[in-house]
Image (tube, rainbow, N blue to C red):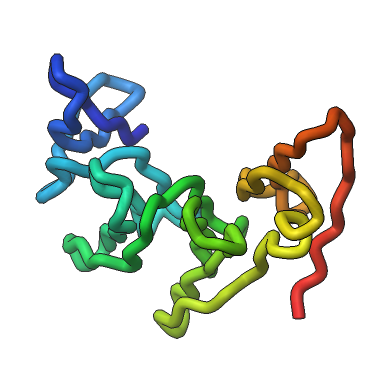
Length: 156
């Protein structure tokens, strides 16, 4: 299990790997100021964001080093695809609420999809919420009317 720890003021102190069988703790190097850890399903990478929610960082357990992956106005949700190839992330202040994905095989970041049509149609905010068990995208959509909509996002 990986956990982030906070001081009394709520600032991130460091990230720890905690062995569930014996409670042994190992600090992840240079993790001070990082929080909201997400480990890739294959265990190779750890994604985390900076305390100011502006930088998405990636720790490679094999190479034992961090890399700045992306900058944003405000990073909201990020999550790994089931096969660990892609890390999806969203800038909450992007005008189209765009969701991007980093490809672990090529190192490229590309636009996965956005919510611009929903936002133009009256939605107040749209957020990426990860994946359903079948791999489809989950989203939360806040509108000014009380309704429930089921969306199927088709990628190009």
